[in-house]
Image 1 (cartoon, one colour):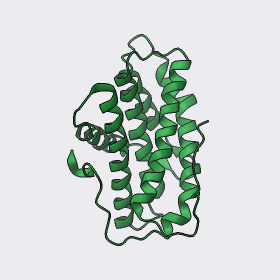
Image 2 (cartoon, helix red, strand yellow):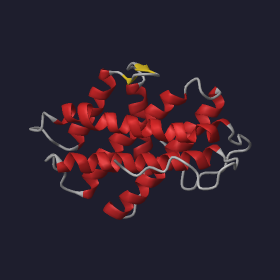
Image 3 (cartoon, one colour):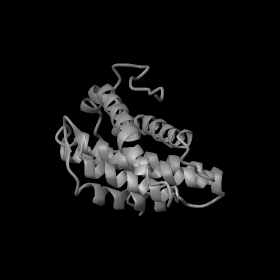
Length: 204
């Protein structure tokens, strides 16, 4: 299991939603990168770093949707939207940095934001319960997208593996992170938002 950072080093400080989103995004990146590595360790091969990033991006979109569902009803709607937008920006910035390393100069935030928007619409049609988490159909869609990202026409077991092995780990990890960030989110400073570096959620 990824070594998540679910607590702040400096406690009792009021933080902005953008700062909290950055911390959550860091943990989500660890969880999703580990999920991709686990797939490879199980024999489901990727062939390039770009393909790994395609797989990780699917896990990231799934994770963002989970956080969106988890914060529904826990934060005021305006606060929740701001936090989710900030988390999307944070993830897009991380993906962009890794894409530049793998593929060279380019603007990769826009295509990732487009993926997020598409998946958020798709996953929103699926069931989710606060106690039990995402329904089977949501996890099945994730598994199918991961399979397609891996180009694995013959690896029909990828969706089942994602459903049974990797999605539960991601769900458990995100719940742990969100629980650890709970007090900070409730006490966050929702004054004027910080301007994100390198693009906004609406770029796509």
